[in-house]
Length: 143
Image (tube, rainbow, N blue to C red):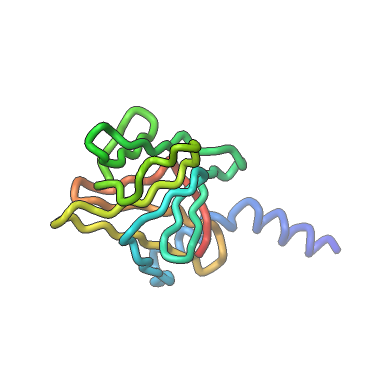
């Protein structure tokens, strides 16, 4: 029993560091999901058939929001920054439902990649645009 407790304490203390080290040395499983169009349901994105809730590891909602501007373009706001995702494909719902369907602008590339750790620790999602990488407020999950 003492050995089990020692192994458990060691894993809790060093498991995450070991997982991050292995992920840098050994290639991780990467999944590329279709991103055209992107759907937003009020709580997060639906990328292909995978739901990405705007939740943090403490189970609170991340400080992310989507809105449409007067020219029908969808804008993603996070913390103090914002960028345009592209044109909105569906009309604004008159009953107030938050569903938004958006496609990238012509010529823009939008990729959504999920990385899965070898040891099962959560790996952050990242959204890459032509202006750089957006970490999504440190949203975690696994595909």
